[in-house]
Image (cartoon, rainbow, N blue to C red):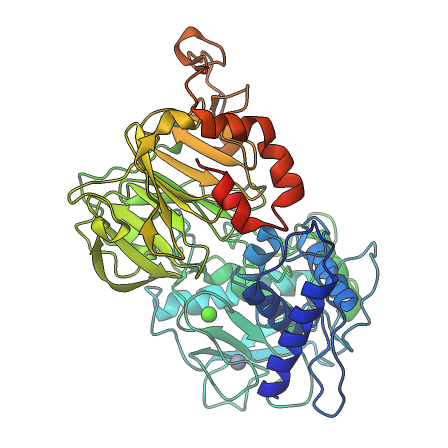
Length: 566
Ligand code: ZN
Ligand code: CA
Ligand code: ZN
C-alpha cells in the first residue's frame, strides 16, 4: 500500500512535469506529493488500488484540485498554487469532504450540506466523556459544560434529546475521548495542528456516534487572542457528524472541514441555515411556536476563559494599526506580522486569524524566553524551514518546533556582530536577500554562501525605503517593502517600486482604517522615487526584466539568475 502510494506520487509528478504547458510554473515534487496524499485522504481522489494498475491522470488530479478549491472557496486554478498549499496545511477535521465512492463528485448544488446516509432511529441519545484532555487548561467541569452546550445546539433544531450518563450505565451512544496518535480506529491523530478531531456517523456499531479529540491540541474556550483551538466550535462540528451530517462548503456552516476559530457565546450560538436544512433532512422539522424560544438551562458557573500566565508588565498588547512591525513574513501563504513578543496572522483569504495578537513564545516552541523581538523572518523555499532573526543570531524552525540552538549570522557570511533589518527570498532567482540599513547582501542557498560583490546599495531597488522593517513576497509573487505604517510594492520580478508606492498598510493588510491625513502620499516631496540612482545592472532589469520574466524564466531559471545582477 505504501509502495503504491509512492509509485502513484512519482507517476503523478512525471505526468505533471511532462504535460505542463511550457509557461506554467512547474510544481515541486513535494507539492504534488502533498496534493495526492491530501486529496486522497479527504475523498477527492480514489484510494490507490493495489489490485489494479490504476493511475491518477493529470486531468483527474487537476479536476480533484479544482473540486477541492471550489469546496474551500478558493480560485479554481487546478494548480497546487500557494493558497491551495496553505489551505491543505490548515488545521481541520479528519473526516473526508467527499463522501461515498470517490470521483462521484456532485456538481455545484444549491444546498451545500452533505449527509452520511445514516441516522439515529431513536430520539433520545446518551453521551459520556470517557477520557478528558491531559493537555488543556480547561477544567473537567468546563469540558463537560462545553460538550453539553455543543449538543444542545443540535438538540434545539432537531427535537432530539441528549442525556449525559455515568459509567454505571450501558455503553452510551456518543462516547467522547481525548486521544493521542494511534487510538484504535482508522484515524490516528497527528500531534499539534493538522487533524483536530473526528466523529463516527450514526449506526449499530458500538463506535457509531463516538467523538474523538486530538489531545495534543491546546484546547481552549473563548480565547481572545486566537491561542489554541476552540473546543466548543470543534465539538459542535463533530457532533454534527455524530448525528449524520457530512462536510459542507457553505460559507457560514459549522460543518466546513477547516477550523474557523471560536464561534462566540455558546448560549447564543445558532446553527446556519445550511446546517439546519441538513439536520431537517435527517430528523424532520421541529416546530417552534412563536415566542417559544428554544431553552437552554443556564450554565451552573459561567464559562471563564482558561487562566493564562500573566503577561510581563513591560509588554502591553500592541495596536496593530500603529504599524512599525519588527518583522513580516509569508509563511505558507499566511502573512505573519511580528511586533515585540507578539504576532498577528493574515490568512490567504485576507482575513486576520484574530484582531488580537498571539504570543510569540506560545507558538514558536523552543524560542528562548529572552528573545523579545524578531527583527526579520522568512520561509526558506528549499526545505520550508522558517528562520527567525534577532540581534546577531537566528533560529531555524520546522513548522512550530525549534531545530537545534541559536546560530550566529556569520553563518550567512555576514561580518561578525552584524544584524539584519529585513530578509526575504526572491522567487525570481531563489536567492535570499539580507538588508541592513541602506545596503544588502545576496545569499545563495544552494551554494550556501554569499554572492560575491555584496553588500550593495539598497537604492538598486528603486524607490525602496532605507532600513525597511521587513520585506516579503505576497501570494501573487509581488515584493512588498514595509516600513512604519506604509508599504512599497514592487511588481513580480521588478526592482522598481510601483508608482502608487508608498501606501498605508492598515486598510490593505490589517483591517485598519485609512489614515485621515497621510503625509506619505505618493509624489509628496519627501518620498518622490529617486531617479538616476540605478546602476547598469538595474537598467537592464528595467528595460527587459518583465519580458525576461514572462518568456525566459520558466525555461531558463539559472540564466535569469545570472542576468539579474540585483
Ligand atoms: Zn468534520
Ligand atoms: Ca492534530
Ligand atoms: Zn478516533
